[in-house]
Length: 266
Image (tube, rainbow, N blue to C red):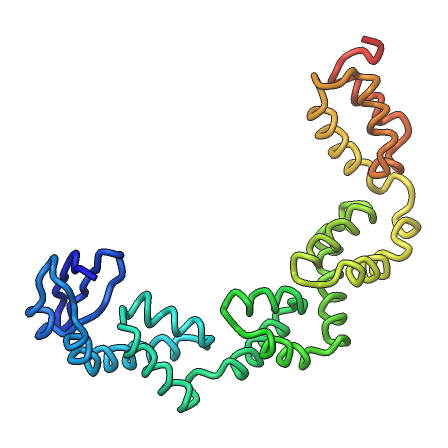
């Protein structure tokens, strides 16, 4: 593979190949290379101890900053440290043999942390997969997150969402709870069940007319979005048949349509 560019930086040199790969070399070896020339096995062999040392030093800093999966460290060595393949393999071998990289432990600690943040199992699994963790390690780690703990986290989330949207009628808060819960990795059916439990008796507690302002605001938005696309009478039929407006004040839809769109008979 021909050399496209050589950048000398301190004790290091970054060599860019024609396939756009970058590799780190010692200054001493890089000074013997020429743009347009090839890198033979002898040069790679001579550079390996230097690349190994650079990779080990930088990987320690990378791991110390935060817990990392094996795939994350491998990508770091290739994409940020610019190590040649044999040096990167040896660095990974050392890190794994000495316990600096351990995907099983990484997954356990990741699940513990995200469980504490209130995430559901599905979201945690997706995050771990994005970090290159093996399915086996993910499943084993998630086994430590009991269903009881997950449902407790889901209920805490549901109460927070309900309280934050207290000005909305129960059906709207129910939608919010389910949407937020699913986005946090909880099962839809579990979210539905918990939402219904949290909102049990809400209609009776607040009584009629408690959410008139909410219905008016939502109706205005819907009517404006339909204005010009539907006749006033069609807009009314659409909204009054929508379950979302089942408990809207009587005559509200008709009055708002007439105010925004003009005569209902037009």
